[in-house]
Image: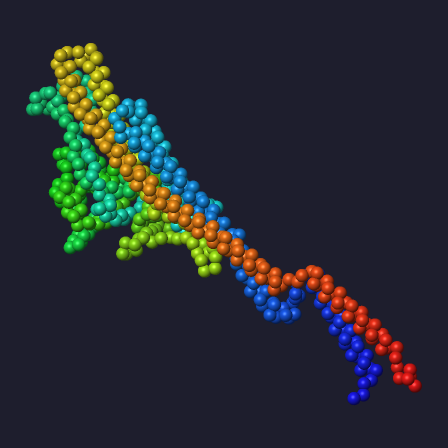
Length: 517
């Protein structure tokens, strides 16, 4: 085959160009320190780089954002629960003190002040938020757990399901409270002839014990449906007599008594009081009661019912709230609780529920118990005040006669009995509350322990994801990057080859056929 000078020069030009391209490639690599400049340079490296970059982006999202965000949420929740637990612990301390009979009126007034402050604060912690998202309200993070102000027009239709074993408790009720006489006519009324139109018996206080179920709200409007009583072999409605308050109950029944096989509902206190025979039957059969009632008006600090019960909001204090009625569902038809979980993805194929719902940790029983403790203190204080007023009357000259003194002595004996009853009730109630507060405290700390377990799991996940991120970074660097010293060597070799090709081509250009003729 004949090789011409033109062929040689074309081949030389092609080789020079190839060497020049290699120099250009090595120059780009030296500048960027990357193996490729575009996907077409090496499709295998490009595809692997894309996959590693996507994986690294995901892992970095988990490590730098999701896990820290989840940890912060858990920290806020834990702090709020610890604060609530400490408030419950303070309430237990007060209950422990109140269970003794060594405290005077001033001490009990102090207890009332402390309990009122605790009652107001205990669920304020329930409105704790992280980045303006409340942490105890499930996925409704834009809403508060409690009412932030008094809402007198707000109305809910609430359904509560009670189990006798868990919710029925014995409670003391008292009959026969006397008012202190202020005039001689009032003083002698109990000692007139019973046929006298002005006769008014001196009350002899008595105590009756009944089992009750306490609704989670007081000052209710009344039942909106019949109470459903369910146990094996029975699925009926219970007979209920409703009264506004205990005074009306006592006046209607001739004392605080419950007719057989009947329930008494006191709207003021939210107590559902069971007749002894009915309580025994329900307890023997481990019955459940479904109570649906209406409540209008809520006080600041009270828990919103939608986070605890099936309910319907039928009226609102906010004129702008036009989306009524609103139905809230908390339980499945089989009674299982519906959980409104917030899940964070903290690693590939791994999620964690970061929120704690208030209904799993505490309810309004804590507030209701504090109210009863406050009322017990007030009843005891008021009874002792009446006793002091009787002593004061006995020292007044207008009641100096022997007859008046005898009557005052009987008045004092009756009111002393009130003091003894109320003091005894206070001690027993506070002693019971010690155990209840222990139960609340244990439940709250169980929630805190659960948060601690979640935080430990998050820390382990963070360590693993951090190691994974470093591994992916190393793989990506190995796939994409070049060592600078090696690039310089390769560039120098390419540039030397390029210069050599230019020199060789120059030598070829100097030789022609005439040189050999």
